[in-house]
Length: 176
Image (cartoon, rainbow, N blue to C red):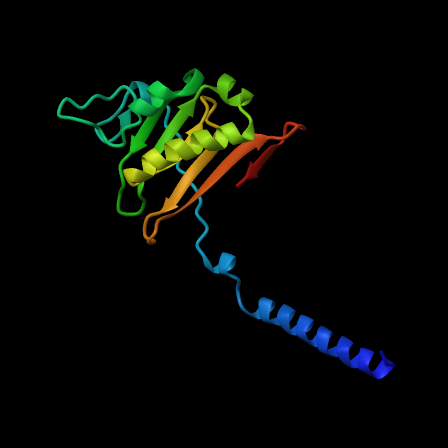
């Protein structure tokens, strides 16, 4: 190939490459324009497990008229190795959808690998989502271990799972 043709090909290639870079800098990507789903930052209220008020539902709440929503009792009964210990369900309000804070047995959680944790969060998240609730997973030390957060305003509903884990150095890291 002649030097002139090579230079022309190179300039065309660079032109397309640079225009692609400038276009990507000028216009936001789909990931940038979509809303990031973050779990609620409301504190876990462990005292509600022993002293529930009339607005929350816990694993110890029984509704004599029928099933209580969200219904996590079956999930708790089927929970492998008693991983799911308790939960607090907060009803939706004007600014946020309903939320379920699940408390797990830390000893069992710590021996699960990433896929087992993901599967657990996904199963419970699907149950909560059907009742229009988001889900957060905690231990009794009130550390956020994972979440299943949905945007119920979109059709279809878009959801995001987040699993927090300790790496080998013992540092907290978040993975999605």
